[in-house]
Length: 126
Image (cartoon, rainbow, N blue to C red; front, side, top):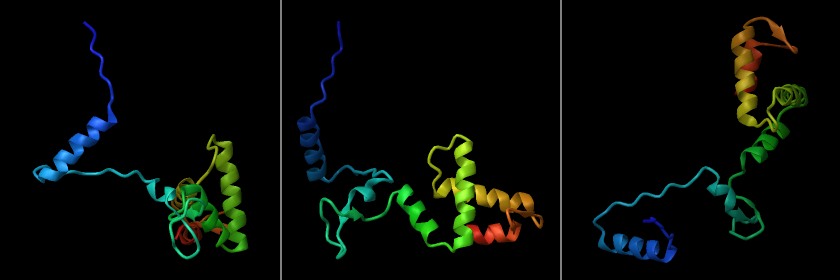
């Protein structure tokens, strides 16, 4: 005897409508972290199909953060990104960079590495 299950989206929607209309069961929706990146807006904040994401994805956020740093910090971040790439991190993002900067701040203390000491790395992380 085979047990074949067929996914029927229409049936699921009918069941969902019934649950919602009765109001007896609680319904929770799980939205992934990338959901706001799917909402595109124009410069006036209106939703449009081909605008920029409402909230940037991690890659765009990384670019924005690095772009707004001073030139010496940008150079240091680029060097950290290069080092991360040699350690099998294909696309270093803000999370990987911050982790490295915070580890450096803890590890070197008052010593100097790449022109900064521990407190300077802590400040860079901020």
